[in-house]
Image (cartoon, rainbow, N blue to C red):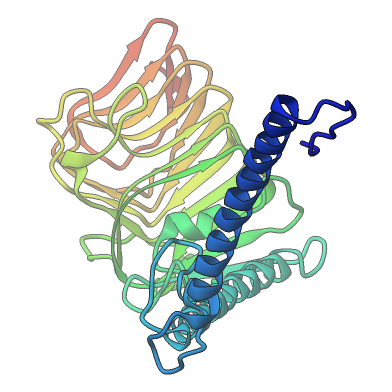
Length: 349
């Protein structure tokens, strides 16, 4: 607001009023300026002249970090910030190292699986020496579980893959699904190469709970496995030890199914269903509820070089075909359901 000017000749009353108004204006301006000076003085005192810490000129506001934490000295705040930075850098370095190791593992698996078109690929598993996180599936650095090894197989590939399983107990329900591959083998590392004789009563080095191939296009070869913990076996339509559903062909050779499942309702040790073919040979099946079961649309062939006694139903075909020379004996040799067909030694049952 500007000061008032006296422009008239009369200077008595009007002059006094104008003069007093101007005085009021000047006083107002003075008070406003004094308030601003007081604020600036306090700010300067806080920023520069505020004593404390190790220096009388320390900036007090700088002792507060972005989280609102107040430190005794600027040095203390800076040290805290630097120490936190160092910790964050170390944490980041560990994360980067872990990611690098995981990437190296992934690259090694990819290199192993895609080393060349059509080449055979070997993946190793060891319950005692393996590691699912740090392993790469090589013989020197195997995986710990069969399922992890199976998960390394690409959904579509041109390589024949063999999973070598070291001796041990693998209480796993292994599932192989949606894979297109020429051949997938899962076999015991210690078992000898395929021979002409069965396994008799011999204990096998690799114990597993169950295995199921589903919706694949491949030839599966399962060799040298002994199926255990059948009371906890999973079920598809029925509880099973080994099964194949809509997945090409599977051969089960020199495997053992010996845990008593006669009291497990609807248990079928070996099952096939859908567009699948299954061949069981040189294996031992004892005390099973149902030893061999072919479900709708599938075909199951049981070689005569199998062995085993004490089974409830040896061969069961439901709307499917089962060709049996068996070698396994039980209370009921064969049973058909619906349009099931069982052929044994050239005779249709």
